[in-house]
Amino acid sequence: MCLGIPGEIIEIDGNEARAEFWDVEKTVRIDVVDEAVEVGDHILNHAGFAIRKIPDDEVEETMEIYESFLEGDEDEALEEIGAGEGEQLGIEGR
Image (cartoon, rainbow, N blue to C red):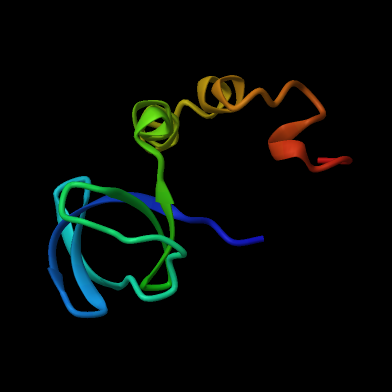
């Protein structure tokens, strides 16, 4: 399982882009995303690659979930993604 971190594209230069992740800027590759990425779009980043463009209607909810994890409120974050007791992140037995 991999974990993608959401960020906002702030600059594009060919197959690379600068993305902001909670006030930290990183360079990411955008050539593996299956649709065009533009400045202002939100992406999921894994290991320096934008692996998915986050649809506009999912951005707010996605950011809230990650912010809950960053703030250390695991229970709230799991509740937001619909994981009940014994169902954390959809993985049986955990």
